[in-house]
Length: 117
Image 1: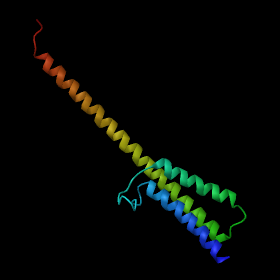
Image 2 (image 1 turned 90 degrees about the vertical axis):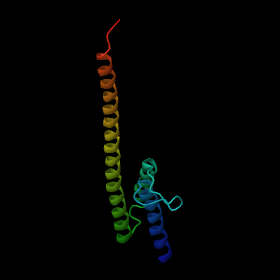
Image 3 (image 1 turned 180 degrees about the vertical axis):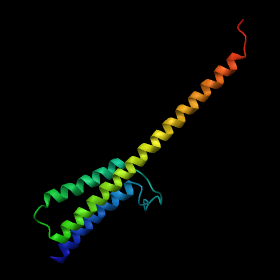
Image 4 (image 1 turned 60 degrees about the vertical axis):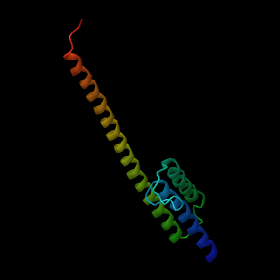
């Protein structure tokens, strides 16, 4: 029975590690870079939720606690990373709009000095 428990924990650890790597929290061991693939992270969280649902009433209290805690930590981390990405997107959008407006102002001020013929 000990071996089955270890396999369960290994599976939870495996899926959660992929999720944390996909959120850019852990670096990818192959590229040595933190990369964000939030769709993959969400998929791993969904797998753990499914595992919890499918193993309902078949887990001991330690296994269930470990699974619940892992899912909770992943979901909180996912929301934090997702919000950070949205904020970055808004900052980039605002900076881009500011640059466009500055370029327009530059053109209009140059055109003011020219006389129409």
